[in-house]
Image 1 (cartoon, rainbow, N blue to C red):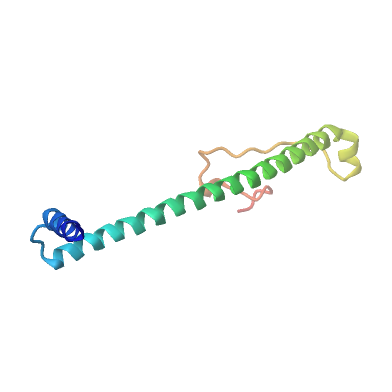
Image 2 (image 1 turned 180 degrees about the horizontal axis):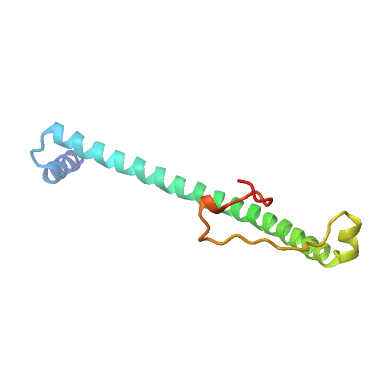
Length: 116
């Protein structure tokens, strides 16, 4: 009975592969191994990228929280500035505003006292 099983296994392998050159068999097995290796590499890469993204999202959440605190501080400081505070710090009100238009050529610019 063992002889029959042995013959059956040999025959089934022969039927599956037929008369395949060992070079082509190794080529197919090598391609299969390479495909499996690439599959595991890409799956692992995806897992690490997802974990990294979660870490970056946590850091972004902290940065946004800090930014919100700074914006609140900025608005509070901006509302506390008054004309008296500005004068006490040495700022003066501008008496004469000077504007520059886009059409002014370089030859028409002066230093304010008329000289070029």
